[in-house]
Image (cartoon, rainbow, N blue to C red):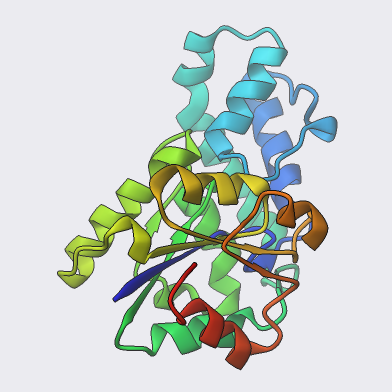
Length: 231
């Protein structure tokens, strides 16, 4: 049995900038500044890491950042849900709906999330897609600011949910950034990169993922490659 863990932004969906706008609002409300958020590279970062980087850069002491973080994320989720509204802003990436459904229907697969989004943010972005119930487990930025520490959390939750123990080589981490590949490498998982985010395939190829896709539009081929033995 394999555990398939999907990133959210750029891999499953695009919220068309809603996350950045919502966080800028929350930072300004909570800390009095959004820092240099317009120039900050969000790709592959966890939400707590983004807040820490931006607010440290704005000169706010670490203790104050940590103390106000829950309030910041409450404001973020509220604004994110307002911006997403009826969900029309959320765009599914090519093929992912059918890919997730195909994997979730298999008896030898468990499908979950591994994302830098806090859990409430990930749920807000995925809720309009109708796919959320198919992700039986997840590890989120709200679990740890260090993305490399998320796979063991996902594996433990997968074991609790399914009764199966997932060795690292039976874990498949799917994302659209070099940091997703790094995360898989750090825990011995199969690294799958897809060029539907802001990194081109040639950029991702330089990080030597085990599998590389332009997109998942060819669902049958994607399922065959993902379930065909890993590396």
